[in-house]
Image (spheres, rainbow, N blue to C red):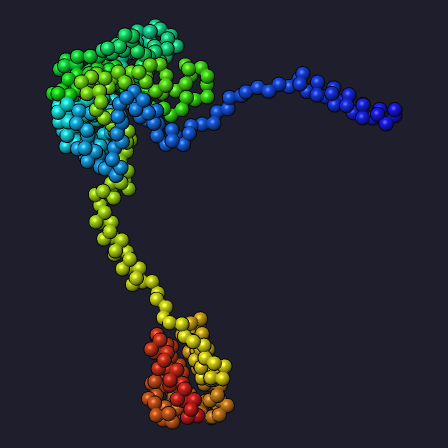
Length: 402
């Protein structure tokens, strides 16, 4: 019996631990913010594009590598172009004229107004303007600051043709659209002014919104409360509203939809590649030629002499090149002069003891060299490589005759 006591105690303890574990812990699901997928992070308008396709329409990407002028020239006939804000670097007079001609031929342009600090030639061509947002009544003097913030964040209510209910759109831009000629046949107003409007132009239509940031999706944030989430295409009635804006030109529901704009500044690299590539190519060629001229070019590798062919003269030549490379000419000249004067004192002490002038004349007579050249070798200084070579030759000749 005793042999079953210990296993029984172990089983009882294990059962007690399991009971305590399951009574105190439970398995639950927890939401973890993992960020946006790579495609959504790279393209904040991916949800808009997929919405267009899901509603039975055709979305066309702008041709890869096409310049803005070529992209405008290739717009689909009778299609819809959604033009984002921050496009002023793209809107040259020629391109604005081409866009208006495309609209008059039957295209539908949906454009966001530029911020007030930026020019907007596209709206000017459509005879539209922009003004600063009027403060709501709740935010005027005498009302609390919280009331003004609440009024500013309240979405506008838009009634679209063919829709049985009004749609809520959060337009955050602090400006309103002005119709200079009163040609608009559809508009969305609130207490602060016109926020969206649409007007016919030729066979086409121009629709302008104070802001189109609500058709993008850059993330819903980490809050579960919708009031604290950033504005995006999934909030309010934004998805239905952009489809309703496209349907303002209902006679061409199957025409293609394109998206352009959103360029905050012109890329210097793109501008240089487009307009200055001949100058850059010439500059690169000049740089290559200059480098080819100044970079040292090494000759063929000399084969090492066999051990039996090494001569003492070769060693002396290599030693001379070494000293010439690492010592100044004046120091080498001084060394050669000291060596010659030492040998002169050993071999002809009487001549070495004479005055420099008499010594130089006698040495010149013995070696067949003019006295002034001997004086330059023994008493002067070298003024360059050629001078050093001449002085070294004179000292060698004097050394031979003494």
